[in-house]
Image (cartoon, rainbow, N blue to C red; front, side, top):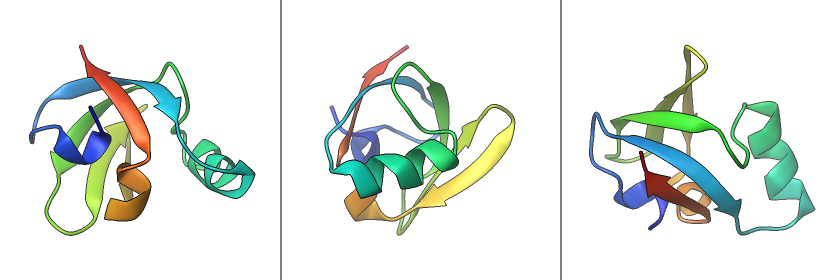
Length: 71
């Protein structure tokens, strides 16, 4: 399932980032990489997640390239 499909308030673990080097680096700098657990705050418009007690907003296109599993 993609990060953009996770419901508000749910926790998910990032399993794969399907994208090129540039996308992976942008997400890595925001703390979003394989193995991290995130909590979805909002998925209307930009997808807003909490990771390591920080709030990060990413575009829907980026969120659709992040494969997660519910935890």
